[in-house]
Length: 119
Image (cartoon, rainbow, N blue to C red; front, top):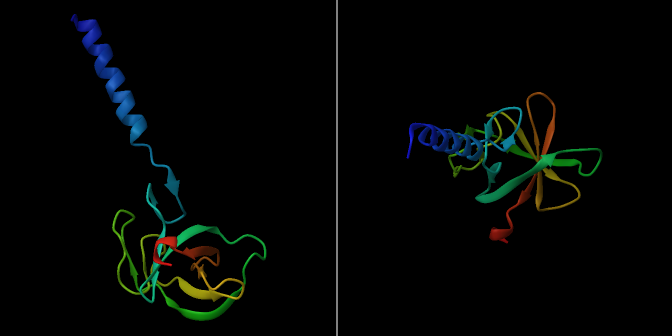
């Protein structure tokens, strides 16, 4: 194989690897390709998105995030998350017992739903 083709194969491989490593998930605090996870009372909740309109309303304040892990680290402690920063407040939802609402320190809200695997 001549030098030209070796160079072309190397460039193609580098482009392919670069495309595969593109991060596909982001929020305002972290970037990664992992699910947003919240642990409350030994239950796992998955991030569904930001609260829009009046889909849900907060009920009882359950607590606040005490441990924030890196996106690639599975949280395990009560009131820990790989998505939310420490201090984010966690509330039950009036409309759905499987939904928790998280109020970030900037005032925005996120919706988390109980993981189907745990039901």
